[in-house]
Image 1 (cartoon, protein in one colour):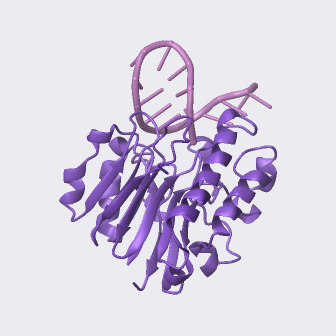
Image 2 (cartoon, rainbow, N blue to C red):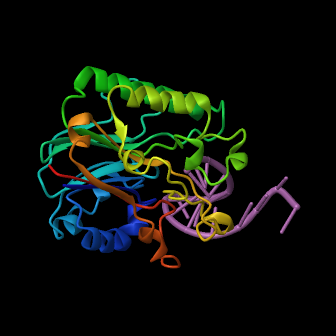
Length: 261
DNA sequence: ATGGTGGACCTTCCA
């Protein structure tokens, strides 16, 4: 089973790119973030034409997450159903696809250290851990995919000095991510490439960052042990952006992992 | 020069 993730930065702007990518990569399950669509504006028919069932959790102008699957799509849950979201933003959707519990996650950006949304980000990650504790078991095949807006380690940013005092690399953010992982999840990319650097998933549109390879690795596929045991490969699909540069690429690169399940 | 691009949408927010 090939499971992929992509922050598309507006599905309305990106649909042709997503369709090309689906036909090339042939993923079985896809998690998308930042659809930026109203709930009912999701292009269900376009994905059905490519063989995918889908679920969208959208709020309109911002955020929005979705899952596509061609191996079944059941037991959908949106966000955490904990009644604790002070902004009521559409940032998580869960489904069971081909026997794997999957979540498409768009962790809050944080904006600036100590900003209201920075604390919202930390709280959101705490709610994610609580949701896993309450609803799931690390002995089941489960994967969290999405834009975590956290670079787990210093070799996940192109220049550590450029991130002094910035979000995405602070200890509280990394600690909150570690707490999620400590439930029983492993970063599939790092499992296969423990020392790799320069393989990023996000490049700011400005300042020619993509061409200068000045990015950060903030999009992750985390897997529980029974799923990890079947891991065949994992890649950051840099061509997902390079090939389309000048042709309305997302600022995020797609990534995927292959499991023998 | 503290910018730069791109997407939401219409004047500013967000990343």
